[in-house]
Length: 500
View 1: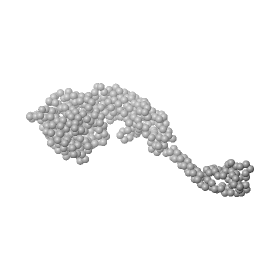
View 2: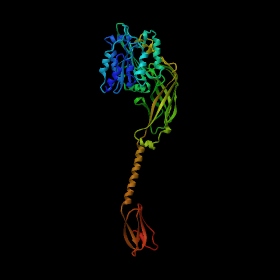
View 3: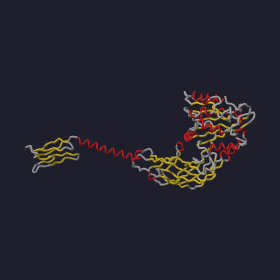
View 4: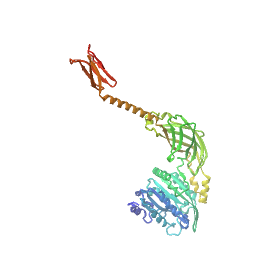
């Protein structure tokens, strides 16, 4: 914990305080809401319950140094018994706060209504709204919810209606950008109730919250605690499908692969200039637990700033279930004209590696119809018998389409032959220049005969020297170059020649 932890706790742990006590000034990035209403009694009283250890392990797994977090209990707020109520508020330091988290959870018991022995009721909407509006102060962050899915304020038996209100809070509000649910098997038995399962929700608030959740999922830290796949609640109009390349047909010198982070990579040999490629994909549904019962699929690529259509063998998608990819053939146009030639500056600069051209593949599903998978309905009925909550996963009627964008990286591989040839030519030029410079500056001796008298003249390339007869009269000029010597301005009648 950091030095400001006591201040955080002073505000957050006031007796009977609402989450407002640890409000926007805390800049909280994660809020953990733990239900302790009457319906949760067996999770607290069963000696074999793994509920509290699960909460502690997940809190520790998803918290990182620098995170500001609030751990809070919730049921339903009543006069004298506010809800949610902060149990712990701190800034995570270099030393993980496991002991603090476990101690706060150890003190937590099933809540009762003020002044009565009646167990407290539950209000999921109230808890999540308080976390978003008060603890996070409307700022980006993550809200975690641990619940048995009994949403029954004032012991309202109309759970279907209450769940629909909870559903509207998630889907119709703009605050929550992404919502996931993890249904977990956790059989517990208490004096009054028994339960088979527990639901863990995570809500990403704001665009930054969505990015933080995506990054957290990518690290695998959640999966180390919860091995069940995440069921998506929101969004249902983005990232609905994924293309995974299987093979490339009739396109020598072209290879497709999936790189780090799921980025699609196209490796092209520099001599390959095929304008298009026949590519076979696996089309995968990424919206567990929904089956895309039908949709119209369109695709295009964006490369070198130009949009190019991708011709699909079939444009209709039917009964595409998560985990059951379907084959899909396509013809994709490649940016052959935009790729640098092997003698270009770009090619020479990347010789021996690759010239990278970033782009993307865009997929669009229209007329999309989604259905909750039978396996998921069966699992929910097993974990939460008699609970109509699976209806919360019913897609909003307004969502009839979705988009997915796959990063594409075109990598053109240039050999080092042109570069070596260019280097060789440059070295030859340098050698010739060096030899010329040496010859230019080297002294030389030239034999000249003037009126029958042989003379040796010392000179060098680039110099012009006068020649005189015995009387001292100028009879000619000797000019020396890299390529030889010559006589200039020869006086009429003078007898001057090169050599003997």
